[in-house]
Length: 275
Image (tube, rainbow, N blue to C red; front, side, top):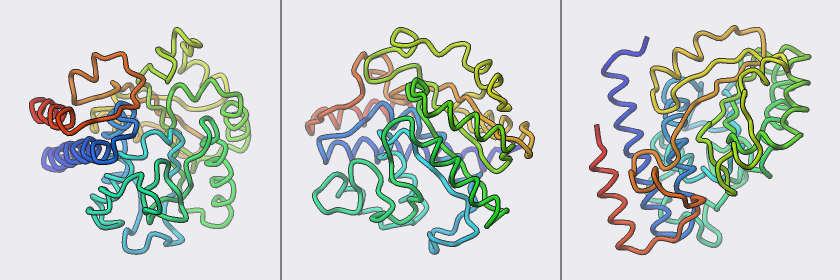
């Protein structure tokens, strides 16, 4: 079980990441805010507790690999990587600028700490599957984690990857679903219903567990409860726009253009929700 001090540090880091996400998108005046905020706690937990990495050696061969399938959350991933000193924190303010290290969607050729470039929605699980198959032979100690959005699960390629992973009993592969209930077109259950989601994963041969995606203790316990000899999935319930009440309640598809006044207002809301 995670001790109280470690948990408090992770929560403080998650707040810092959320601040950076708002500022990055405010400076760039473009980006996916709500999707990044829903994924922030999961990313902070992964990089702070789970992944075996060496920020000063981003290409260390024995490292765990991470695939961000929901590329819209790249601001949250960039802010998390900066927290771990993969690159200079000041680089965050170059987000989305022509030629910068931090493009709209993560690019492994540009940014230290990015293992796989963000891809068309629904492709991340397949890429993670390929990585897991290769590493299973070449670097058995390395694990692969993939974070996907729930809306992506409407892509057929996801379920093809799930079948193959179950067939090979890939114990080095973990899929985490950011289950915030929304996609660009609206609520997932109104666009193409996903429930009962856990049962669908189980029917494809995956070990499945539910967790609170904003509670790092819950995420930690969920991961620890899963066996190590089969592909597994954590369905992490989240809230889009988490931490900023007006975004949590809103109906925006999450891609926002901010002026200075709105950016300041959102940062004040974020600070007001500090716990």
